[in-house]
Image (cartoon, rainbow, N blue to C red; front, side, top):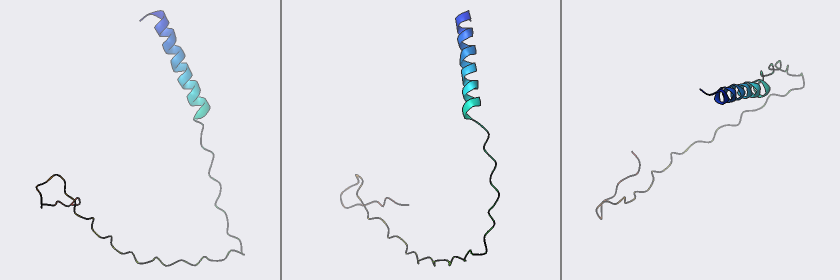
Length: 74
């Protein structure tokens, strides 16, 4: 391996380590949980609306013989 390649490899590895040290810092500690005040009011839960099942997709021809349709769902 030529000397220029060795120097380039060392400089490249050094740059990668320098970027890692500068940008990938430790996350700050999580703040303590807030204590609810005496003025806090309970929130009423909103009931979920009833969910209707979706209708199946329409049948579509996909290059089959005329008059024959294939569903796109399983």
